[in-house]
Image (cartoon, rainbow, N blue to C red; front, side, top):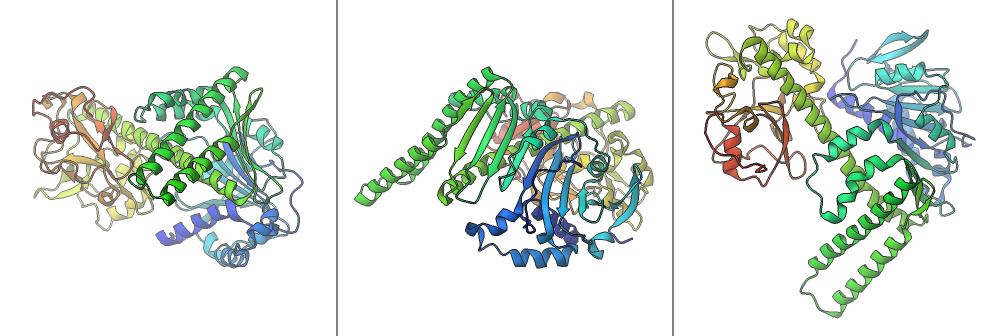
Length: 537
């Protein structure tokens, strides 16, 4: 069987993502949402009724023909024959990305392209044959009857194939969704409540007016977003609280947050026009104020029992504004989830470091060396038995370099714990790098012992989340060499405002890009005897 190239992997993932959101439909829309293959472990879903999209005058300039030809050429089936598409996501479990799935229902039998199928192998569950993707980034596939295609990560696909009729929060929400919407996204918030609360603990301190946002995870039960492109149907967001009292608090938080957001946006716009007192600039200020007030008024939530509903008319301007308002929130949520996942990876690495120390009496050295002192393999390879990858460790030839004929075949089996969610991951690179150089925990040929760390394990950084351009093949003995003259070199550009660091005691802290250079140097060295101010990072 063939191993797919990086470019081909990206193309396949792109097409499946496209089908989840932009597939046009056949001649009639489904009368109801069919949840037959929605598993109980799914917590979020996006449902598309594409027939309306292809028939909506406002979208007549969408290149449906191009989408049809491109998908047929790449995947082998006709996207215009899809009657209903449901994209699914499960709750994250550990450092790996969450499992995902896609249910496509066709109006007539279809076939998959050979180029997609050649990267799979046959497998079976509960008497149903499916095609397992050969790589971690490749989808697994199952044609149920020629008219229903299931795709997704293999664990999710198996759950979809064996899904029963049992109730679940998401299945109940899907059944209640109005089928008139062009696009609907729903999220059962309960299963990820603690994950979101954990992510919020790592967010920089909010200003006092926005502090109530930190209580939202305890108040929210589910979210529904409906988008319609026809002027005849409105778009909106429905937030369902845990109870009526929580809904009232949530309403107050939303109103206050919207007012603060308007003030901040207006302040930024007015600041950019500061010093301009000509009539045109004054008129622009009046216009911006009027538009901001109008938008705030239109987006006022309406509360009924446990539900809060924000409705926007389906004209282009309002829909555009709504999307513009949602995108930053979605991006912020994605970044928070990625940051939490990356933090969990570092914590797992920290636990593995301590277990290694308990076993061998020291941390692993930055690299395993040959008899001549030449680096062979990274500390990440030495740590494999302690991140539940003992079998992979046993397959390495420890007396050969990372790119030897044998060892380089193992590169594509990169453990998930080394995969940063902010990096594409298709080239088997990691940016979890040890800080090396004189005076650091990985500065010598031998591993550092805890008793040698005079500055204290809680004040010493050992692994950092480096910039994307510093990422290295995970098994390669290459890390981030500390430069006292430029202590932030290679750090702080991966995510907004700073980077995450693993300390020797196993804790993970977010380091702001504004950290004092001397404080950062004190945190990186193990025996500088510097006094590190509490909260100094």
